[in-house]
Structures are given as C-alpha cells and as structure tokens.
Image 1: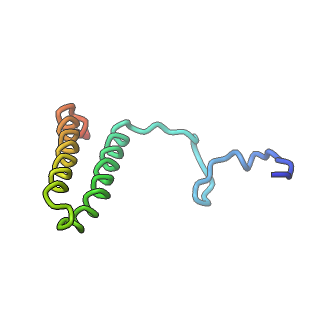
Image 2: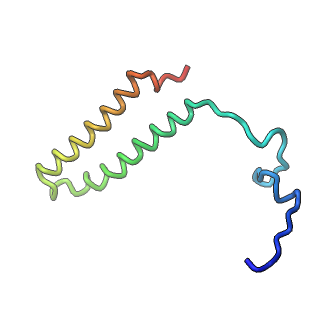
Image 3: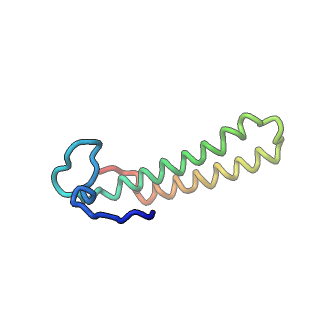
Length: 91
C-alpha cells in the first residue's frame, strides 16, 4: 500500500496458467453457454435447499411438504418456460 507502483508490460498480459499467452486476450462466447450455466446454477441452488429438507423430513410434517412442493413447482414452472421459449435447444 505504501510502496510506489511500477507499471510494466509484464503486469498487463493475461495469465494463462504459466503458459505464454497467444492470440487475442478477448474472445466472444456463444450466449447459449450462459443460458446453460444459469440453468445449472438454478438447479444447483435447488439441490442446496432440497437436501437439508430431505434429511429432516420427519420434523417438517405436512407444512414442510407443502412448502417444498410449492418451491419445486415454481422451479418446474421456470424450466417449462425455458423449454417453451426454446432456450434449452443447443443447435
């Protein structure tokens, strides 16, 4: 924090796991990769909520079952929407 900063060309190159970089530093990716990544995150978060609920199922009784059914229904509704909008087609 107190030392002077020295700007060198070496500090401005992209780090490629120890390999010298080649080509452009910026490359464009297809938007469909992001859609699949968002869908993965969505269902990964679903698993984070469902696993603890499933391990303590006997404690939650009917109210917990109804809550989780509503949660899964909302996620299924989102999946159905993505399916209808053809967001899950790769081609």
